[in-house]
Length: 118
Image (cartoon, rainbow, N blue to C red; front, side, top):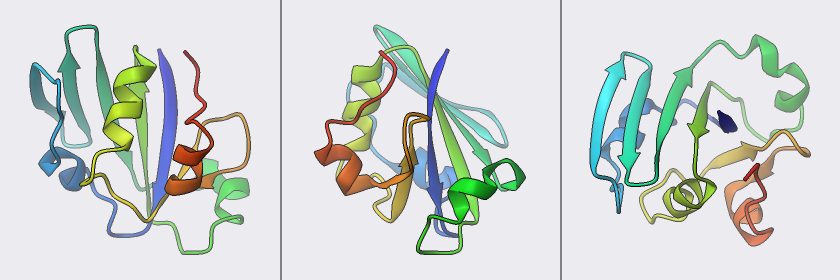
């Protein structure tokens, strides 16, 4: 499985992800209290929500806000993730950590071509 992480303030919740449109998804459902799934014809995306940021010390120091949550996006098809990240109702005030570089604000990450493991 491949993944990227979204770091956000207290406004970043799993509910915000569940409420957004998932164009192209054949099915969406809550797996558990902290996991949501969007299934697509060519793969799925899991959104794993966590408020334990103890593993994120280095990244948190680079953020211009007090991070309160992380959503790890676990995927099979990078194109589906790119499509979800560019939806108008995707949370905007977040940083993306793709494990390749320093976390970037979502608009900068999109402008950089959304590099992630294919």
